[in-house]
Length: 109
Length: 116
Image (cartoon, rainbow over all chains, first blue to last red; front, side):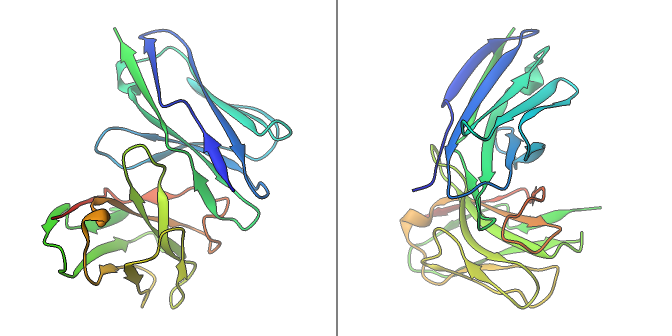
């Protein structure tokens, strides 16, 4: 079957760095997305990786290793507003989007 | 630009009743999707439409139906609601017509449905 694994919850301190991991087993691969979802709100797009390597976008970076079925989202200079759930999603060979359950990130002052 | 709107925002429904959740987008996106989101689970695809006039089944289609008469609207109907359909429902769209594809998905604000 198809599966995406992410930690259920993580805690970090304001101003610090946190890395949220995502591993996947899917039938084929056509790209990996990260979305941010604040409590009670809709998911919003953060990043897209289709090739191996690091994509940097301001305080957020996303890394992909296709051979390892692994990605991470790196958040730097954490702010209280970064408290949210972070969803990993993979597009399989049929271009179906498979979603992880999300990682709830709690930022403490 | 409004993006995607959903109605109602929330609803309490008696089991056995029918209900239509509305979704409208103004981005002229080809593809639209309905998801449900339950605590501890990832977003699960209910139905999708790659382009106006076509629809397809997702991961959890039973008990739900959709139609896509035009580009902008993609209503989701529960013919006879059951308590297990209590969830938060999100409508989403992408520019291209593949099911999910490699395009960023834009989400509506969601409908919180409780079936008693």
